Image (cartoon, rainbow, N blue to C red):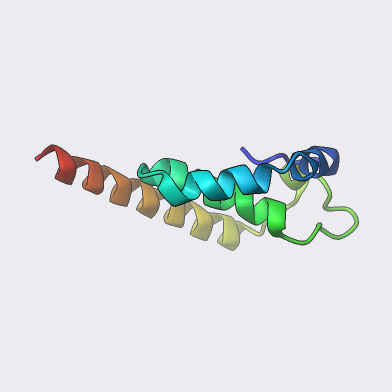
Length: 89
């Protein structure tokens, strides 16, 4: 899970984590690990949230957006399972 509070994000940025993740993403073959890297990289290189939204875990997400994100997560999981099964066969 990405660092939600602002101090956590700043600490992760200051330690040069982006460069490590970028290199890991280049050679990692596991789709799940690559997806996790991509999500964290987006947090690290993205703009800081506006006032009142500093803790990403406390941000209110509209119901329809949350449902869409859940559908996308489910689709991603299904694709990963299919890819794994394809490698086993």
